[in-house]
Image 1 (cartoon, helix red, strand yellow):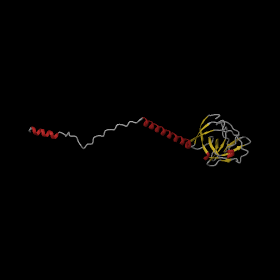
Image 2 (image 1 turned 60 degrees about the vertical axis):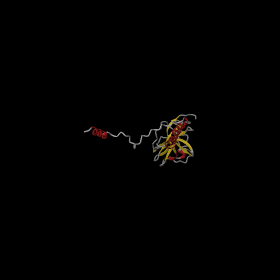
Image 3 (image 1 turned 120 degrees about the vertical axis):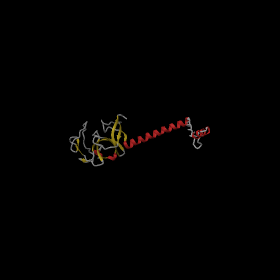
Image 4 (image 1 turned 180 degrees about the horizontal axis):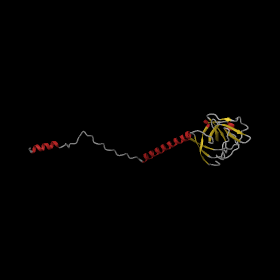
Length: 202
């Protein structure tokens, strides 16, 4: 084989080193735009306002749907709740005997203790100063003498109906509770007390 033939074969076998003009060159990354101090401040302020808005929305949901806040303005529930105490309430779930609840009567918030739920029969033994639930005297950590209100039209024994609860004040001498008002509709309840913060004299 002549030297010319060998050179020709070597040339044909060698891959073309010519650049492919059809290939698109990779786009160079553009340098990030530097923010001015004013733009940085505006961006930080927007983030802060967004966080505040989210926290405010969460607080509204918690205080209107899940729970609420109330302040005691008298001693009708002493010693469990005193004048000035701050109350945190929980609105979800049912109500049971013994629960301290916040309810509303004629636009005024009041605090009381549930002593009867639907199906219970409440009776008051005036001569002996106590009440019964379904014929049984309930256990109370502190005994409170319980009597009827002389000015009341509520007749005992009283059977609690669906959609209502029977409420007493712990200070039983204050008869402005279900002994005068009758059973309270559950729609008037603003939650059961789950947390109490002592703030006497406020």
